[in-house]
Length: 200
Length: 326
Image (cartoon, rainbow over all chains, first blue to last red):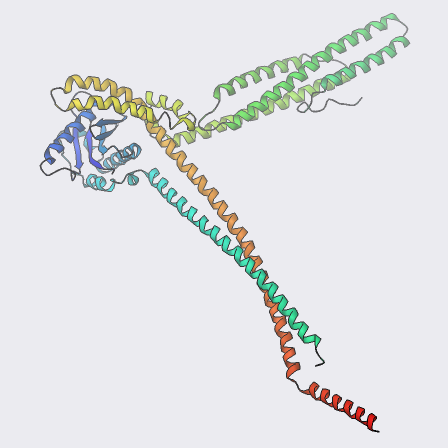
């Protein structure tokens, strides 16, 4: 099953120093209650490392144990996503794109001056995390492809039923032609009995 | 003298024409030759003939060259019309354009310095000039069409790769030849760079748990990640392009399915009309039969004819009885 474990937005300084985490949202329902803090630490650390390594203006995906970390750096603002292997790559990156756009709409350029971790709260990120568990939501192309496939299936069924209708119409034609022949015979008979025996 | 030069696009009969003209001129000049008295007059006709044949040869060469150029031009026009977003034969088109330009300029200069006094040669020269002008016009049209096509493709490419245009550096330059690859081979190279990148990073990352070891490993990781950056960017674009093409082909299939549905339904509509006609025939038949039966019923149920019949039978017996008795 496809799953997003965490989404993060970081500010990546050009070289050297560690990036600053701006917003962090994670869904740790898979892990037991006592593992959660360590998993959170792990996510934070891995996220910082990956964001540090990514050059600006690039997309990158790193595989770590059973997770893939997708990162997208745009002008020093970096969005990270921890997803499992089944999540399609393209939707992951379009999701990161969307997150970055939203962030820039909401916070403008104020992120450039932030120095501490987790200084801002952003409920949109946790909503996005739950909403985009289904990759079709993030990627319009995937959604369109899915709808088109459904439409194609429906159309196939329609054509099958139309063919059945054709068969039934053929039988109807046969029956109606038989009926018209029988009625003609009936008419002839009636005429015959009427004209023939006027005497007795 | 019939002007049999014909169209250069279908068959080049310039040589025949020029040969015939030459022979005719020779015969006329030969006729004039013996009738003339002085030997001085033999010279100009012969040199005229020589000049004529020379002129004819050059004119025929120029006509042939124009014909070849127009053929090349038609090939160029086909190539220019054929260009699509993904594979345009830019190199061939440019070569062909350069060759055609050279030919046209050479032919132009040849026509300019080919001129003669007699009226026939001026007509020939005019004809050649006209053909050359039409060839240049076609050439210009093809070039404008080609630039328009290029503009349209540029727009489309920008529409589709709008995110790539934000990276004016190396990855973008690398993307274009990859995007220009034919779509059929998209699926094969796309998994490969991705799988390669996965393997290299998965080898490195498990070691990265402890902070102390992070420093020497990070440098290794950086170099290898840089290697996988460029193919990742390309594969991302490729996968987007592939998805778009899938969507397009699905929509196309849907269109064909709808068409088939429409044909099926129209055929069945015809069948339904036939059924309707059959039923109407049946109805009319049954109504006629019903009328006939009604008449029969009336005739049976009325007693008039019966009384007349009984009366006739009585009269018949009475007459027979009367005849036998009396």
